[in-house]
Image 1 (cartoon, rainbow, N blue to C red):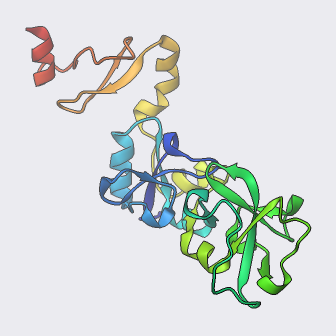
Image 2 (spheres, rainbow, N blue to C red):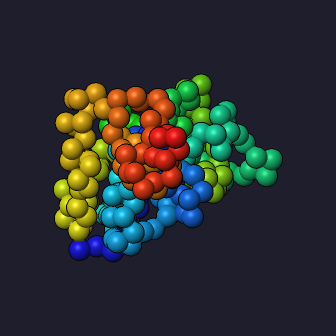
Amino acid sequence: MKDRFYLACFRDNVGSNVGFHRKDGKGYTTNVEEAHVYTREEAQRAWDSGREIDQPICADSVDALTVYKVDCQYIPIETYIPEDVDENTVFVAFIARKWDGNDVYWCSETEHLGRSLDFSKAMKFKYGSLPTHVKNRNVYIPLEMAEKKKRKTFDFSKFDRRKMVQSAGLKQPEWLKQQKRRRESGKTRWNCPSCGKISWQYNPYTFDGCKDMFCEEWRAHSE
């Protein structure tokens, strides 16, 4: 069994990257290094009371498969040559106007079609030997600039439910097992805003009230 987990929120995936609950409940992130770390007990509890879009995943498994990517929002979108450039300044190149979510495709000699989202596989060029025949198609920026903006990401296609969830010691919540049957009945799952208990109802837009007669929410709807 494992005792380190991240809590993914598949609603907040960006491109091929999985979105995770950020540390201390401060939103969501695709940067694995910013994800909150849960113990197995905490992860199970979060899953039991969570939403269908939330999925705890073994942190060790995620960490072993992370890839450095760079968000286009944090780097120049056109070739950038710094004023202090010299012939030995190292550059990397990415394909203009092509993204996976927000992440750029780096020019790469080792990957299919000559491009890769994995920043570690980006080709490197010295300024004195930059290619000239592809400058209209590619964007060149200093390697150091890209290094500062890289982040660790986890690709959704690498998610293995059996290995990363079940074999890691987590048990699928009973409500999730019943989700398919409930969905076929036309009902929607809600958590009571007062007591937190699960309630199934036909109205998918507003909460119709708690089914627990001892809950303040139930009493409010009964009066």
